[in-house]
Length: 233
Image 1 (cartoon, helix red, strand yellow):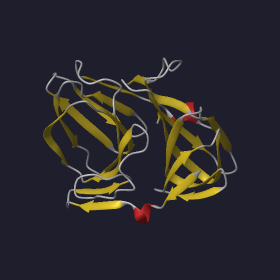
Image 2: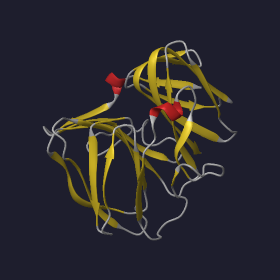
Image 3: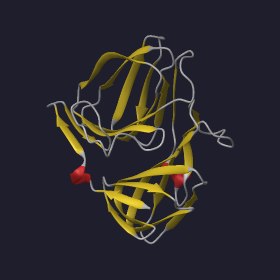
Image 4: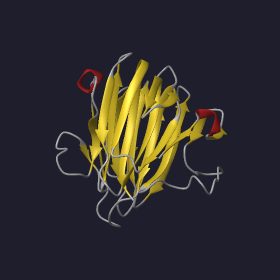
């Protein structure tokens, strides 16, 4: 089963400095059919105006993955971590038993990010933060793990959940496949371009909720960038 979720159907919030689209219920957007997908709870498509951002606020018991699509995001937290994550790269915050952080776009242009929240396998624990570059050339033509709590993903940023966040970049006419194990679900978002997922056509910004498919086969009709979350039920 593949359910296409067109970009135009997503929840939306416009705050002036922040233009947000919500794949799942978030803040003032409520849809009982879009509360979560397996352990995946939030997928926000955020555009943050230059010189603005999220003031310090707290989280606990959530794995928060930020994929930077354009621009860069600058992070600070109550552990003393500070960092700048650029387009194409990833940061992960394991909120654990509690952390306060801020995320700002200190660039002269708008920054676009995917913000992905996944429920951890266990409550509590010491919070942590990390970031890592993932050159697009390394994921050309194939899915690679960007963040993962699953075996065999030593090069990915670690998360405390039985889940995996993957990325791929496909040229027009190129294909990539990913095997989805029994009892798992996937959610795929087309960051840019056009592609078909098991024959279902996606445009830039669209999501696809996937279950009951052993193989996820993606074919690009023009250059496409994909982010995929594999999660247990």
